[in-house]
Amino acid sequence: FKISILFISPLAGICFLSKDAGDCVNYAVRWFFDHKRSVCSRFWYGGCGGNNNRFETQAECERVCLSQHR
Image (cartoon, rainbow, N blue to C red; front, side, top):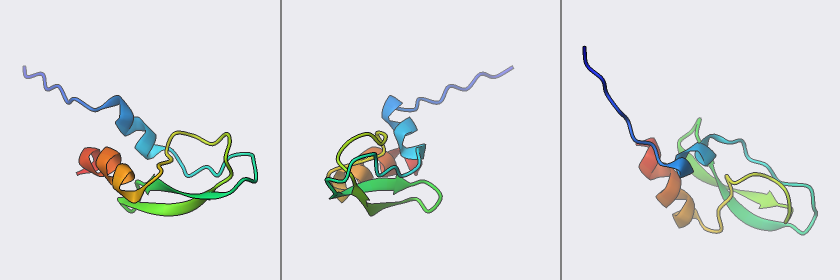
């Protein structure tokens, strides 16, 4: 029989989390990876809470998530 091993970066898991604006109201534009559409999109982040599918820039989002998703 054949065994195949697929390496997935630990960061890749965050790319499948839902967008989460967090609990606070100190809003700033951030980027999240929309795994259903395979694109990075902007959203308003409240400044605290939320999850790790949140990036400062579109380029950072794409570097982490698009490289894993292709």
